Image 1 (spheres, helix red, strand yellow):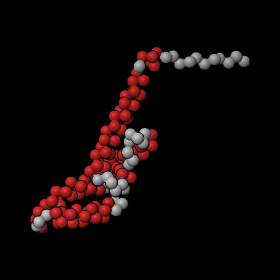
Image 2 (cartoon, rainbow, N blue to C red):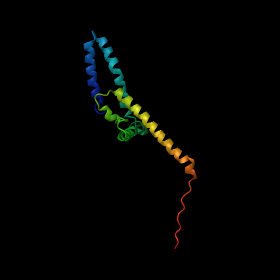
Image 3 (cartoon, rainbow, N blue to C red):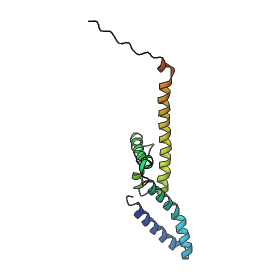
Image 4 (cartoon, rainbow, N blue to C red):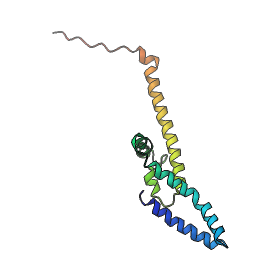
Length: 142
């Protein structure tokens, strides 16, 4: 998505070149390269697969979070990061860092939504709400 595979390939080429320069032989260079890039490759595959779920899972794990990110980032940009797709376009962020940050954002978002839902239910159930009487309407005299 959005050239992520191509960008990752360029990063792989740079990392492999560095590993070949730093290692005395090919097997050690390949082990160093794999150790350096395997984690990022794994996260990229997980992110890409999360975009292709389909059905209700697509909404729950892709569309819904994009909507939540837009709302929360718009309201509190210093607290919440932009959506996942926008973060993946930032060259200074690794795939693992984007995943970590979005998990943190999602945890805080769900806590805020749970607190809001709890407050809404509590307001409906509090005694002063139940004891209120409907306002009597004034009778019109003709």
